[in-house]
Length: 158
Image (cartoon, rainbow, N blue to C red; front, top):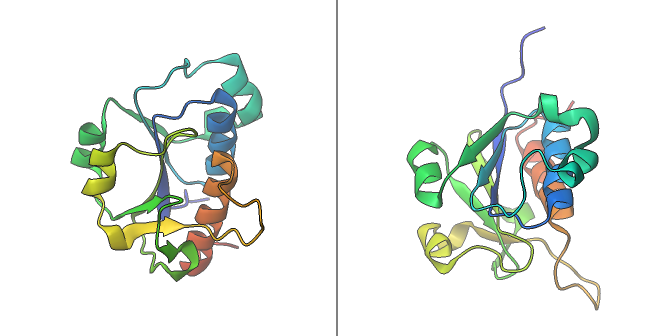
C-alpha cells in the first residue's frame, strides 16, 4: 500500500502541557498528518505524560522539531492558518489547500505577537463557541476540530 500524502500539517508553537501534545500526536498519527513542534517546550519529548496521552501511536507520528518560528518558517512551503480566539473568521470559512499548515499556540498564551504578525490577519481563524461559557477549547480538541474540517474540505477523509 502506498503511503498517504498528507493534505495539511499541524504546528504547535511552544506547547506547555505534555498530555495535550501527546493527544495531538495521537490525532496526527490517526490522520497521517505531520506534527511540527516549535521550541521551547518545557517537557521532554520522551516525557511519560506525553507518551501516555499518545499511547502507542508515537512511532507512527511524523514528528518534526524546530528550534524557533524562524527555523520553521524557513522550511514551511504552504500557507499558515493561525487558530486563535482572536480570529475574525470561522475555521469553516477558510479555503484550505493541500500543503497548508494549521498553526496553534500554547495553552495559556497562544502565540507571541511577532508570530501573530507574521501570519496575515485573513488567515487568523477561530472555532465558534456558541455556549455561554465558551472562551476557548482544549488544545488537542481544537487541533482535532480544525484538522478534520480541513481534511473534509480537501476530500481527504475516507
